[in-house]
Length: 312
Image (cartoon, rainbow, N blue to C red; front, top):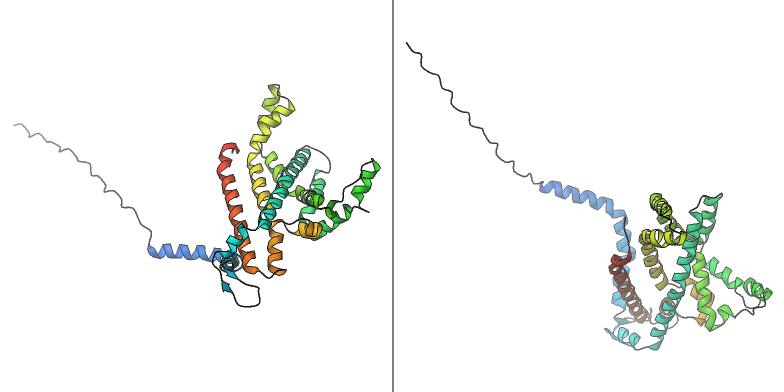
């Protein structure tokens, strides 16, 4: 008697159903947004109160004629049209660009020189960094008065030192032709420490292996500086240039204290329009013209940095 063959049915694999993406609950989203808002409030409230609202108020004022005492009178874009046709506006912008053209190369070259010097191993390096950075945190009033005394045509130390080598010193801040160079010299001296710190941080971030490899290949010090240091320092250079340009367009204290009426820049003209001539509406319009100009220059720099800034 033959026993029946037992056959085993093939097992079919059971596929698991794909898991559905779990969408965050709406309540979780709102809780997350609320948490972010709580952390942003300490900075968002002062930003709104002391920056955004005053800017909007200035924009509204620029569309009116106002002497800070009587009621405003709507003039629309009249203030802007009058400013753009006023030769004093062109002169103020020209003097501001003149300041930047002299200040920026001087402060960058000086800051780079100090950064290269302090990037070497030397005694007292930390003390020297603090000494060079001290003018940065010093009040502009103090610095301007000090340089006004140093550049005094009659009793200043600068003209006295020039006289020792047979050079007759100029009138400096008393001479309209030398007032702006006086301001440029004082401004560059004060800001050298800031530029030095930024560029020194950039120098210390450059890997030493690059310099060592170039040295093994026989590259000279100038070749290493030009081909390695400057390209890899370009992010720090870009930051310094942008910040220095923005600060340069807003130059005021040193011009007001040192040059007086011998040099007029945009911000001093804004001050005079407001407090000397009682034309707050026109001063606000000039502020917005300066804002637009700085915004355009900064946007051009940010777009152009793709061609010359090397990251990594």
